[in-house]
Length: 301
Image (cartoon, rainbow, N blue to C red; front, side):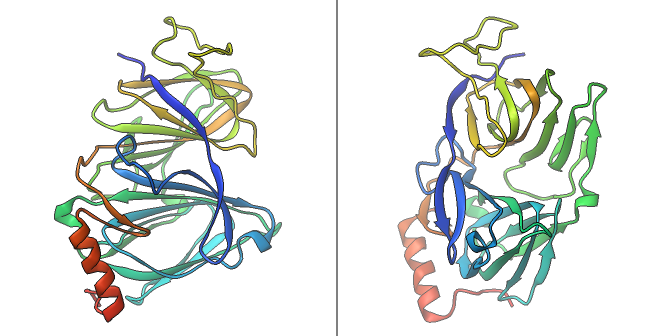
């Protein structure tokens, strides 16, 4: 077994999307080489309705898949193909935009006004860029959860883990998407396929991830040029981007730690990007924009 090295730790940066939704972005709209097949990851967490209520009105997608995971509040969605529904706490939506859709996502807070969720964008290979759009809406109760003897809890959103398989199927990048909670003071190791790019996103508690450069059995927590530590308290948001290897080890702090562990097989294809439209070539991108302007963007009805 080989510990995955840590390339870097990045704090998600404040940004605004849609009609004025305040959120934090861990990565997106930049070089995709290190995160391939993933393009963007946003954390939308707010306690003030004014910061999210305007939502994400009608906008296009082509050539990608969007993965929405809701923890608090609800997200009502609808699209140009006539699909509609509402995601609640614990629910997941995996939307394959494929050849193109126009859709909207409108968040609502819970009884205390809180809204929290994540959205991840996954690229589609060239062979599936123009595939038929489809949705996989999954209720929270259908997402399997496994609990280890030490109290570690893992919700298996996508992929297979500890003998359980997530309900989302047929995804080109064969991803694994786990919601992991490790109790206070516990150290835990998780296997990750060596062929995948992987990242962790900490959103509750605190902890340390072991780096490959640390001595065996040691989780470094001293400042310095080779420091590879993440100590994230509730309310902070940090992305841990891993290098190659087949396992990730985390040491939970005094409040425990909760994080997403996401991995997927790189597509290793060129990326031509224009906001929510992602193709392989500039020519394909120009065609998508021309389709939008001419009203021929929607291929399936």
